[in-house]
Amino acid sequence: MPQRKGCSSLNEPRLVARKFLARPQIEGVGTVVRRSIGGGKCMCLFVCMFSKNVKFCDIAVTAPAGFPDHPHRGFETVTYMLQGAIMHEDFEGHKGTIEAGDLQWMTAGRGIVHSEMPAAQGTQKGLQLWINLASKYKMIEPRYQEVLSKDIAEAEDDGIKVRVIAGEALGIKSPIYTRTPTMFLDFSLKPGGHLQQPIPNSWNAFVYILEGEGIFGNMISQPSNSHHILLLGPGDGLEAWNKSSKLLRFILVGAEPLGEPLVQFGPFVMNSQEEIDQTIDDFENFANGFEKARHWTSESQIN
Image 1: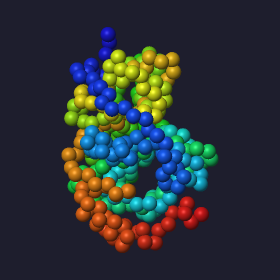
Image 2: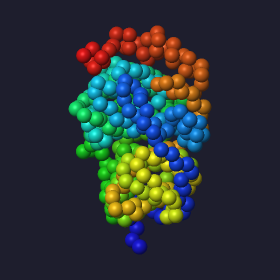
Image 3: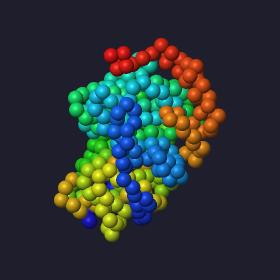
Image 4: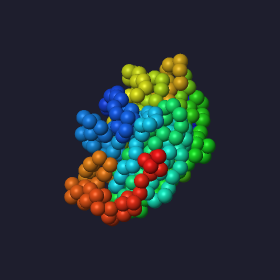
């Protein structure tokens, strides 16, 4: 059988180690969130099996709900819009609209205060991944990497389409710079599609199904459908099949574990409780990265 471009056969496909449903809950101001990784009872499992990434959410928000002015420190947020648009604004004066298919990779670093609010009528839908930063990067200056939908790297081959948010797939690489090696891939498989996607053996990885039904790991696995999170076991890649009559679309996220202590308190992610306490003190006293928060309020809050 001819080999697909950019693909290699897998010696040890990863099996599904744990499967659970992402259930809706309310966060922000009236925002419906399907929390897949990093919430409630999932936190302990998550920290052990996926110690680099902090949280993964499937978000649906309709005005006037949203995420008004709030701080972050110590990690990165990756916002990938699926439907509608979100208006983003921060205390450094950076603002803009993230529309359907667009990507924003925000490094909060030493501190940022921002808002994320609906910018269109109806329901806005998107995904947000929080990625922990290594201790040596936690206090760097904030920065953004933003890519419009039309500029996101894409590839198609034999019933498979991929949008490469970060990492590489089907021979196509994303231009996004990740401080810790990370893949974030948006796959669509037509009926009959069969995928083999390499993942470095040392990385942790999970799948989140956006729509349709697929088989993951091996041919005898039970099918999984939309809004399920699949934590993958060890191996050198993911194998997936679409045996249904409808499109299968899913997100694959993988990353190299940091191997460092992790302490999270709300929007702050650090390495120790002492660092969390210092961060809270800095935020409350407008210091060490939060100076501009003293006199800043987003336009969405003013209006």
